[in-house]
Amino acid sequence: LSASLDGTVRAHDLHRYRNFKTYTSDIPCQFLSMAVDKSGEIVCAGSTEPFRVCVWSVQTGKLTDILTGHMGPIAGLAFHPIRGTLASASWDGSVKVWDLYKRDGNSAPETFENGADVVCVAFRPDGNQLCSGTIRGLLRFWNVEDGSLICEIDGQKDIKGGRKINDRMTADNNASSRYFTSIAYSADGTCLLAGGNSKYVCIYEISQQILLKKFQISFNRSLDGVLDELHSKNLTDGGPMDDEADSADEIDNAPHLPGARRADDGSRRSRVEVLTMQVAFSPTGREWSAVSGEGLHVYSLDEDMIFDPLALTEAVTPSAVHKNLKSGKFGAALLMSLHLNEFGLVKAVIEDTPYESIANVVRSIGHEHISQLIQFLSKCMEDSPHLEYYLQWCLELLQSHGLFMEKNRGKYLRSFRALFRVVQSRFV
Image 1 (spheres, one colour):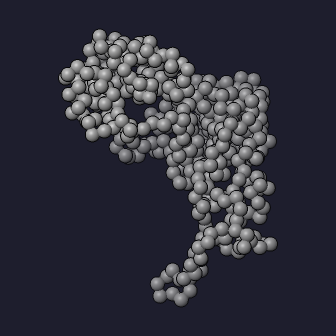
Image 2: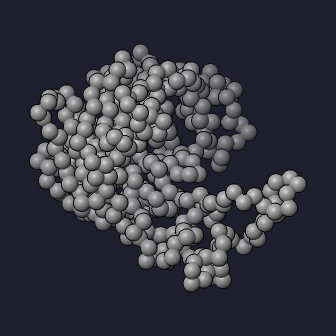
Image 3: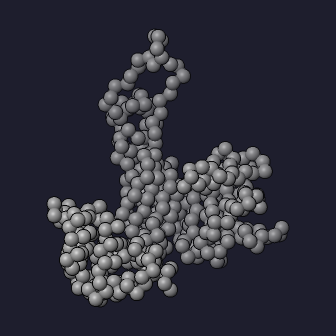
């Protein structure tokens, strides 16, 4: 689903690459934000003018409700992860929480006043906390049940950095135009990821209200706002002399129209600004991503490799794997298949290993291949009917390497959560 300034919300089929349904309002308007509930039955979009939130049924495409009460454009929408409530953030400085299933003519939404234009909003995964971000770089955390303010984090000085071509002040003194436009909670709700119109993305620890780390998403010097200091020789009292002040390249004043003796008077030169449009955490909490003008950036704590170049020799081939299987060398076959990192090959080795040989094969696996083996096991268990067989693999892994994984839980947390999710969803 996507919302646009053309006044429509469109549903796209990712398999057939087509737009199969379009949601429109009763009057022409421009949509600035959008959210879909967890069940996928309701889609909401906030408009710039008139200041309201439109609610549609995803299946029927009918406009079921219109939420009014804001005095400014609705910049952000977020659904409660458990209940059917919707939080809307507006430029009027307020966040309103609507109950979409219990609304009547006399019910009024709960309002959280922020004192400045609110540009982003997000619920904690358990739904008990709400975070709102303002144009002053302030992150406010609210208790959803009683509407009280829990704490505040002033991130304006954390996100500042980078001097734009038209800035009259240095990057250290110009923090007024820097604020967060997108926020996301971690899976456990202890940390908050925030990005905005700056070259930095910040991660905060909420309970201690401290900045854990900030990342610079781009080092491309051609983008506006990457450099902290402009070239001093091109700076005057009135500002930079030209649009390319921080570049050593000469300006091309040659005419761009064929046959013309002078350049096009209507041409404009503008530099793309470095900023972050959207941030998100992965369900495991081991990765997070950010969308900028240069594309999608994915940051991870895990160093996954397609293959192991140190152990991958000319003798490690799919035919050698099958040869070891036929000769009964199941441990060597499994190691070779893990080095090649091909799912079909690893699955064949796992399922061809006799039940009584599982313990010996698991003991032969080194610590560097435990995480990879757990990920392959979780992928194989998704559609396999061999419940007891795969559970025996899991039991032998825990008995042989459980103590080591407990001491290094951070390294194996991602793969272990994937395995636990498959076991819980299919066999519990």
